[in-house]
Image (cartoon, rainbow, N blue to C red):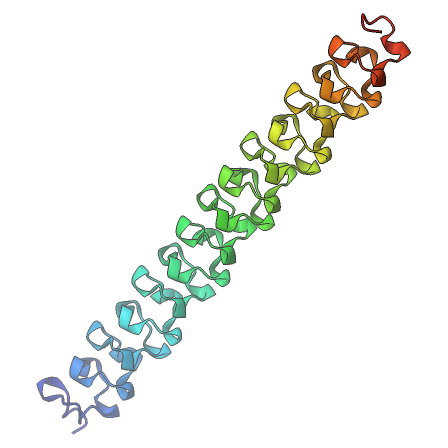
Length: 250
């Protein structure tokens, strides 16, 4: 009489512990009392049976995507839900936007769909994740030196490239010849390496930048009155020094 409820006569009322056998694993008997490994078949994959003892690949369906079933064997794309975003499920097949959480920010999940501030970690600093949302100091790598990431938080020496030569990145760490552009002509960047004609502005007229390329009226100051700058455009009272005695204007 133990197996009397199995087979075609299996009913909801007769699904007891004695009926939890492979021959009795039918949709009509899928109840919590029958959720055992031997009954974990596709016909029994229902929310009532989504327990850890029944987490098998054949039951990894959307109806069973619950925290109790979040195991590596159930980590498939159809089961990638926020409730299952745990470290055991951080696999490429589960790298979807709904699963982009810090505990899943690993190299296997570095995909454009996961480019969020919560996932901006050094292990995910790849070209596919170079987006404004990920422009943080932890992700400032040369591979991410693009215009979308040119922000003050990313103005580091490893990211000083021409495409980032903007006013937001004009900091001493980025004062390189490749970044010597008019937009970066600020006092913090007035260094000999940046003394080019495009950067000859009053705020950069310092002794470090007294070079022939910067001999312009805006830069004719006492600190710049050297022989290399003795040109007509600099013939002003402030620049009349012995060094310029041979100049036609003195």
